[in-house]
Amino acid sequence: MTTKEQLTEAAGKMQAYLEEKPGSEPNDLIDRLENLQVLIAKSGAYLADAKYHLDQRKNDSITQALKEAMAGDWSITIIHKKIDALCRDENYMVNWFDRINRSGTHQLDAVRTILSYRKTEMQL
Image (cartoon, rainbow, N blue to C red; front, side, top):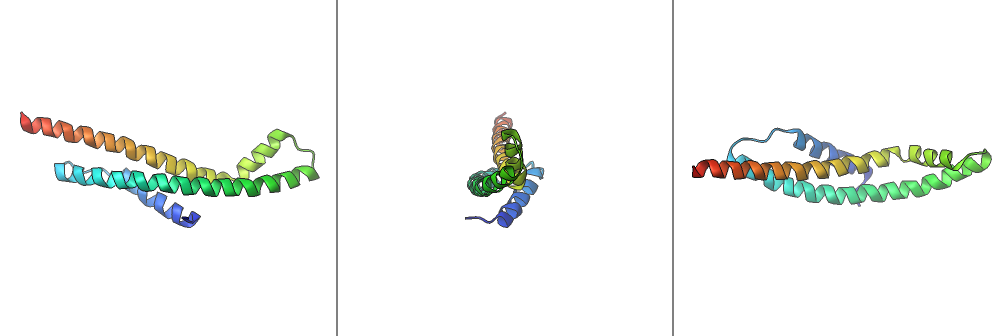
């Protein structure tokens, strides 16, 4: 299981890679295509780990929120908002890996399109 600290570090590196402009040479694009395939696979695994941490935190947060609710006169809405607030870091990590995974997939499609275009250019 990947720790929260490892997830944060991995997400930062993946995000930085996704923000880099790809090279324009076919070999550069092929390298990027291969790297994106790995990034998508890893980000999917990291997303699962982040969701595991979120579920674990929710379990702890529910207990904490219910104890606080019993001491006060809280509505169900307030309890839900308290649980969400307690899980904000884990939610952020889940959302970040979800966006990394989707961005990697979109970039993979774009690189494939560019390579196809370059291949057509060479044939003409």
